[in-house]
Image (cartoon, rainbow, N blue to C red):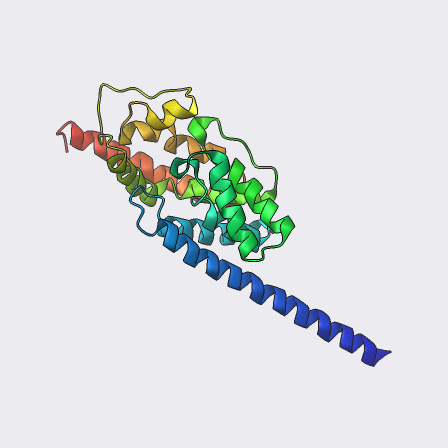
Amino acid sequence: MAKFENVILAFEIGHRRGVRVRKNEILEAAEQYVQAEMGQDSSGHDYWHAVRVSNTAKHLAELESGDTFICQLAALLHDVADEKFHSSHEAGLEKISQWMIEQGVKENNRLHVLEIVATMSFKGGRGTVPVSLEGKIVQDSDRLDAIGAIGIARVMCYSGYSKRPIHNPNLVPRESMALEEYRDGKSSAIIHFYEKLLLLKDQMNTQGARKMAQNRHDFMETYLEQFYQEWSGKR
C-alpha cells in the first residue's frame, strides 16, 4: 500500500512539475510574441511596458494569493489586444485569443485572460472593475505603470506620439468624457495628469497596489509643483 501511495505521489509531483514547465514556456513565448508585435512602439505601450506590468502583476499576485500565470499572461498580452491598435475592441481580443489557441493555452485560462484584457482599460474614467482577483491585479499593475516616474515619462512619450503639447495653460481638465473624446479630444501632457494619472491612486483594487500607488502619486505631485515653478520662470 505504501509503495502504491509513493507511486501516486511521484506521479503527482511529476505532473505538477510538467504543468509548471509548460506555463513557463507559454510565458516565454508570450514575451517573444509581444516583442515582435510591440517592440517598435513609440506611444509608451511598448514591449518593456508589457514586461514591467507583468513583473508587477507577478509581485502583486504573490502578495494577494492570485494565480501568477494568469496575471502574467494577461499583463503581457493586454496591449497587443488594445483597440487603439485595431479596427475594433473585438478584433484585438480575437487576435490574442487565436494566439493562445495556437500555444495550447487551456480553454478556461484563455477565457479568463480574455475577460481580464476586455475589462481592464481606463476608458476616460468609464472603465469597469474586473470580476476576478487576477483581473483586479492586472488592472492595478497596468495603472501603476501609468503613474510615478515611469508614468511621467510615458505620458510625455504618448503626447509626442499623438501630437499633443506638453502644456497649454488655456486648456482645462475634462471631467466626463466619452471614449472617443478621451482619446481624440484636445488635451496636453499636463492636462492628462488631472484627467487620469492623479485619479488612479484612489482606483486601485488591491492593498499591495494602493501602497505602491501612494509613493508614485506623491512623486507626481512633487513633479507638478516643480513644473509650474519652472513654467512661470520662478525656479
